[in-house]
Each structure stands twice: as structure tokens, then as C-alpha cells.
Image 1 (cartoon, rainbow, N blue to C red):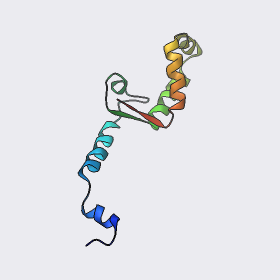
Image 2 (cartoon, helix red, strand yellow; image 1 turned 45 degrees about the vertical axis):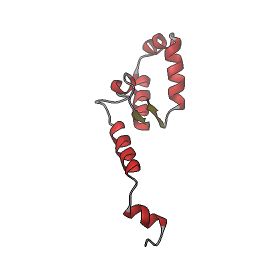
Image 3 (spheres, rainbow, N blue to C red; image 1 turned 120 degrees about the vertical axis):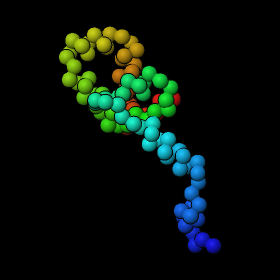
Amino acid sequence: MYGSEAEHRLANPDPWSTYEAAERRASSQRGKGAGIARFKLSSNGPWIVVAEEVAGAWSAYDRSSSTVRSDIEIDEIWRTWIAWLRRASQGFEVN
């Protein structure tokens, strides 16, 4: 008999939660370089884009010349993406 629910869970781990934790670790793998790995945005995942990757993307964007930024921001899709990425600074999941 177990003394608490926590002891019971430690002795009998839920196989699905263990699988989900492993899947989340695998899906948060990083690409080479700074920013968000292209493979995460060009496939259906599931991938986890972590806050550090978002910050790296912002850093790369900030290092771009004002000419490059203004050329990108002409496109409404890019403006929408940039606005959304500002709100997703803590990371997001790609499915």
C-alpha cells in the first residue's frame, strides 16, 4: 500500500506521460545557428520552438539593415508574421 498518491505515481509511472515528455524533448531539438530552425517551419512537426530560438530570430532581424527590414515589411504576410512572433516570445508549437 502506498502512503500517498505521489508515491503511487512514482512507483507506477503513466507510460503516456513518459512518452509525451520524451516526444516534447525530441521536438524541441535545435537547428544549427541562431534563430528558428527552418525545418521546424517547413514541416508539420510536431516541433517546439523555444523562447531562445524566438530571441535568436529577433536578434538576427535586429542586425538586418533598415533597407532589408523595410523590404521585408512591405509584404503583409511578413508584417503579420512579425506581429505574431512578438506575441509568441515565450515559444510556440508547430503542428
